[in-house]
Image (cartoon, rainbow, N blue to C red; front, side, top):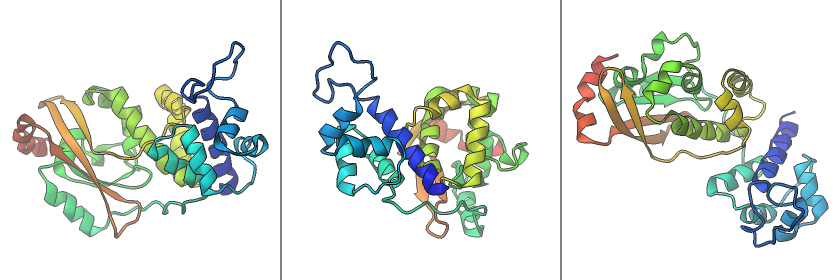
Length: 274
């Protein structure tokens, strides 16, 4: 079932990327009767150097083997970003499956995030459950220990907890970026119940999540600047850095560094907010 689901997601991803590329961007004439958004299947096949039948089978989710060379050609024709090209390769079976989600950060990672206080820091599982956090992080987003969500899932908090919309200065931009990173992780864990249940729940509860999920956009984490409108401390701005935990595959440590002197000066107060 996991392989069948992977092929289905691959087919949908290819269609979504094909429809995004204009004929002009691919060096083709638009033509007066073009009804297909973006490129046609035969155009992608011709530009990639594969048969129309072969490419059609890929978009139909057929059980076929695709070489890395073909995937590289498709990535070029479909104008995929590096993150999207890696995602395509993984969906086509050229990358090992992601590790099983970890449910415990372990004492060392708990000590690490505590040592980073008063800088906000937390430990994130592959499915975006919070495994550990320090007092400054609790002061920034509200103590996860008080959340009704038993899994303390960060993505669920962002999309279903109204105060978070006011907390994040650019909620649409930040929320969509988080969803695209989550999608890349979820597609590496096809068949995992934790991901499937969370995705289904958020599609049902959040119109924005449902709409953005349907675009099949993916992204990898990049150091990012995020702005918060804290209810008591005002505007806080942090640069986010993510580190992989070697002892716990798939688990990451996220540290938030103040990006201006005003935010840095409020760190002691932030830790006291927890």
